Image 1: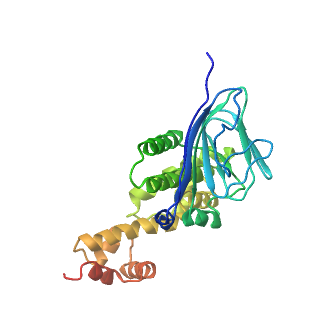
Image 2: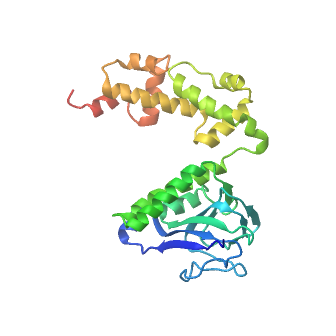
Image 3: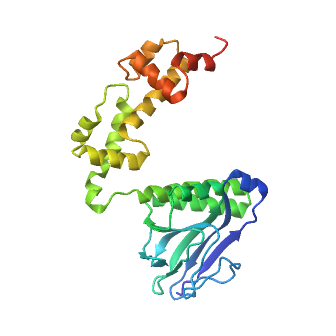
Length: 297
C-alpha cells in the first residue's frame, strides 16, 4: 500500500500584545513525508519555502523535531545525518537546508518563534549556530508538547500566541538540556551529578563538604564542579546556599523561630555568618526581611 504524505501548518500574524509578551510564534506545523515524495511540500509562503539546491535563510528562529525517518541537515561549516529523535534549531540570518532520505521519508514537527526573549538567549549563547543538531533526551516530552500545540492551534484557543510561546520555551529548554549531555566517555559518570543533586537537596540542612561528596561519587572534584555547574547553572556550593536561603526565608515568613535557631536549622553553624550572607544576597538582614514580610506583627 502506498503511503501518502500529509501536512498541517499555520502561519500567524504578530500583534503588539504578542511582541510585549516577549516571545511569539510565527508558524507551527507537522509533515509526514512519504518515501520518495517531493520535499518540501508546496504551499508555504515566501520566506519559509525552500529547496535543497538553494537552501534558505529565515528571519526568525525555528525548532524542528524529527520523530520518525532519516535525512540530512547542512549549514555553514556544519553537516549531520538526521535520525529519529533528532532536533535542529534554525537561527535567524544563518543559511541552512535539510531534507528526508528518499528511502525513508520522515515525520517532522516544527515551531517558528521570535521576540526579545529568544534574542536574549542568542546574545547570551544559550542557543547558537555552532551546534544546531542534538538528540533530544526526553522524546516523550517533546512529542507531548507538539501534540498539545497542534490541538491548541486546531481549536484556535484564546490567547493562542501565549500558549505557543510557552511551548517554544519548553521545547527550547529540552533542546538546551540535550546539548548539556556529557561526551560518551563521560556517560558512565553522568549519574554522579544527579545523585549529588539529590544528596544536596535531601541533606542541605547538614554540613556538606563538596570535595568529600565528589570523592564519594568516585569522580574528581574539578570534573564534579564543572559538570554540576553545566547541569544547574550554579556551582555545588552556590546550589547548596540557594537551598538553605530558600528554607531560611520560609522559616522567617512562617515561624517564630529566632534568627539563631533558623541559622542552625538551615546548616549554618554561626548566626553572624548566616546574617552576613543573607544580607549580602538579599540586601536585608534576616530580621529586616521578617519585618518587611510581616510589617503589622
